[in-house]
Figure 1: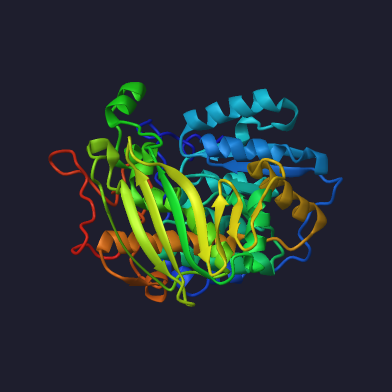
Figure 2: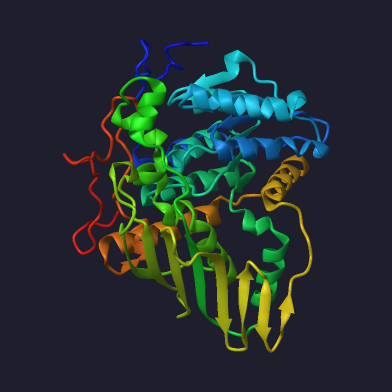
Length: 449
C-alpha cells in the first residue's frame, strides 16, 4: 500500500494531493463525464459475484454496507474495498462488518484506502460503490464513480450548495446514458406505509391539496468537541481535520440540519406534489445551541415554500432540548386531511389508515437497487435526490439571508461554500473568532449561502 497516498494528518507522510472543486464542470453539463464512451448493458446477473466498495466508513456507511451485503439472496456479493479520510474510522467499520458477515467481507489490507483520494482507488476495484461520507464530498465522489462506470448507492443529502447540485444532476444524466443504476438514501420511497399513503393522496383521497406541513423538530444528534478530540489523538488538530471530525456543524460538509436531516420530510412533500417549490421565505438562527464546538449552523429554521400551483408547504426543523418534538409530514385538501407519517392516516370524506407491514426501508432500498442491477432494469434516483436536496438548500438560503429566494436563481447561484482544495493543512471555509466562536450568517445582512 502506498503509505504517502494513504497517510493520516500530522504523520510524517501527509497527503498533499489537491482536488480543486470547480463549478464550471457542472455548469457545462459534466463535459468530462460526457466525453466517455457509453457501455452497453452494464449489469450483473444472478450468478455473478458483485464487488462492493464502501466510501465513507462512519455509522451510516457501516449500516449501508451491512444492508447491501444482505442482498445475497439475489446473488453472491462481497465487500472488497473500503475508503475513508481517517484510518481509525475505517478499522472500526471493518471490524463491525467482519464480525457481522465474515464470509462476505473480504477486504485485503492493500484495498483499505485512506486519505482524500481514497475514493478513486476504492471505486476502481468494485462494481458498486456506496457513497456515505459527509455530504459535502458527495458531488465529487458521485461524478468520479459515474466516470469509472460504477453503479452507485449514495446517502442523502447529495450536496451542500447549488454548484454541487448541478454537478450531481450532470453526472446523473451521464449515469442514465451509461445504463448505470443509482440509488439515493431517501428510504421513505421504499417504505410500504408511505408508498400506499402517497398513492391514495395523489389519486384524490383528500381532493385538491392546498397546504402541507413538514417537521423535523428534535434534539442535537451529536457533537465532537475539539478538546476531547485532541486529547484522544494526543495532538493539536488542524482546522480542516477538526471540521471533518466534527462535520455536522459546518455548512460546507454538512449543509446545516435543514439539509442533513429535514431533507427527508421536504422530499416527502415534493414526492406528494410531483413537483418542487418555486420560491421560499423563512427565518432561523442559533438561539440556544451556541459555543465553540457548535460551528456555524443554526439550531432552528422555519420556512414557507410556494409551489407553482399556489399550494404551500410550511416547514420547521429545530435542535432545541425540552421543546415540542415531531418528525412528520401532513397534507390538507378540499375533502380532508392526512397524517402522512407517522400514522399513515387519512381523515375526511375517504377515511383510511394503513395497517400493513413492510420490510425495514433501509434494507428495502438496497434490495430494490441490487434487484435492478441484477435484472438490468432502469433505476436512477439521483434526479429527485438532487432536487429534494436543492429544496433544503433553498430553505437554508432563505433563512440565512432573510430574503425571499426563487428556485431558478438559487439553483444557478455561483456561490460555492466548498474549500478550494483538500489537504490537512489547507484553508477551511470558516474560522473561529478570538473568542473561539465561529461567525454565523446574519439574516438581512448575509449573502445567499
